[in-house]
Image 1 (cartoon, rainbow, N blue to C red):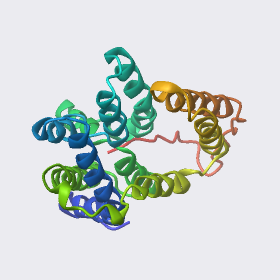
Image 2 (cartoon, rainbow, N blue to C red):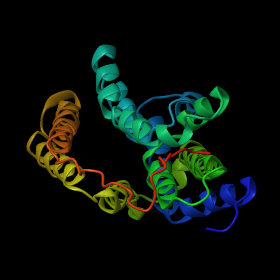
Image 3 (spheres, rainbow, N blue to C red):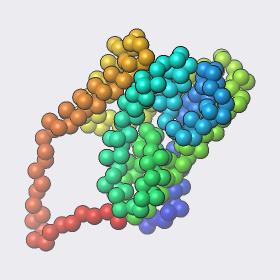
Image 4 (cartoon, one colour):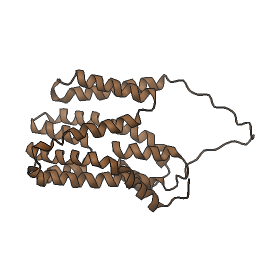
Length: 249
């Protein structure tokens, strides 16, 4: 791979999100409309996108607030929904562990499904990774900016969006696209299938508990399959007796 710069990596990260935000921006508009319709003040609805910055949790949260669910159930539900970010963090940690704390805090805030999907591909491509965290920043910032903008459109102009547009389907399409391209091993496939089946079967459970149950079972099945995967035995490097050291710049 050719030599990279912070600017080239940042712009590449921004470009990686352009096809994705075509699906997430309608998603953000829908959230803004539904949040205000559920009784949230416009300022609070926009602040939720700024502070939480997690679409799935925001949708579930505003729905549960709208029907008066207990705060404990709301917190537990959103916590379980966002547990996948722990797995994302563990996946990118080897590539960013050398960064200063200020970078880690910023990238943790910007870590989403969409940003992770393109960033982990960039890291796994290898090559020069010295400035690859700028790719992460570009991907995360592009999604963050588009999410704030689309939420604002939904919050302040939502009444002008014709119901005939039926934008709610974009949420499902966006996540299906993200999930499908990431199904590259048995563990991820098993997790997706088990979670999907449980989500459908348990759809009618109250307080969105079916979603919580699907997430837990999906994570559990994925971890079980991953832990039972045979470990490949490393082969000795016959070309030299010198030790081989891997490191991240």
